[in-house]
Length: 348
Image 1 (cartoon, rainbow, N blue to C red):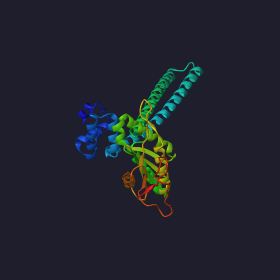
Image 2 (cartoon, helix red, strand yellow):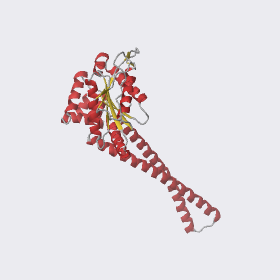
Image 3 (cartoon, one colour):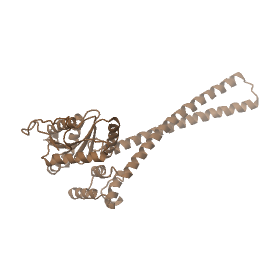
Image 4 (spheres, helix red, strand yellow):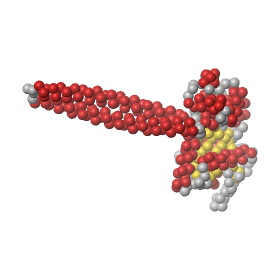
């Protein structure tokens, strides 16, 4: 594992190490095949490749989940420690100030104090000095704890973010999906999951190069953000595949939203080079509605199956995992004619 990291000049971060360890251990045949294919195409791996492999194949691993849980607990502990240190600093500083004022008052009121009282006064003055020193040290430790907490928070944020698009990655998506499912089940509210990927994305990379492919991915992510409602949860779940969790949304409404996203992407011209060349792409989308007490994995599987149905039916369309409910009449948005015209949604 370490030799592979050195050979490709990639830092031995926990994410990178886990990808290469899984590759050499043979625990993820799909990861091994994908990594071999990338090596055959590029000759070597970049950090972005390792990040993508981790998001796609390793983010759900028990090790990754344990690291995430420990980091959250540590961040909470550091937050509490910073607060307690700040309180201790205030108390020590206040106590030192009161003692100092008391010694000044005693010296002024009783200039001829006998020796025992003078010793007490000297000890009190020493305690004042110690309190001030302690207050300074507590303040320093509180600042250090706060800085460490902030650094840990940023590390957790980075670990949950796709480096290329800035969207949450697959690990963050799975956590948010579990939270959304729990809330929808508790509130007995509808929830839909939308999955989509970019049609013929490999040809974009093959024809225009990987920088152009990266530009398209960033452009699609920006379009996705503009399309989403405030309470929707978005993610890049791997490669050219994206997801959107749609709370409080039934199947028919989700299908309409999905088709509006399809139109928005198809209508964009993404800039792919220094010369300002524009490239248009289409997307295929799958929609599934939660059926409690269904698991997130099952819902994800149904949405993914619907996505592949849309691709099998010709791409650039929306497919639903199940027929519409009786109270949700099927919608048709005209035929598949000229570009920009509406086309029928594909129901599964």
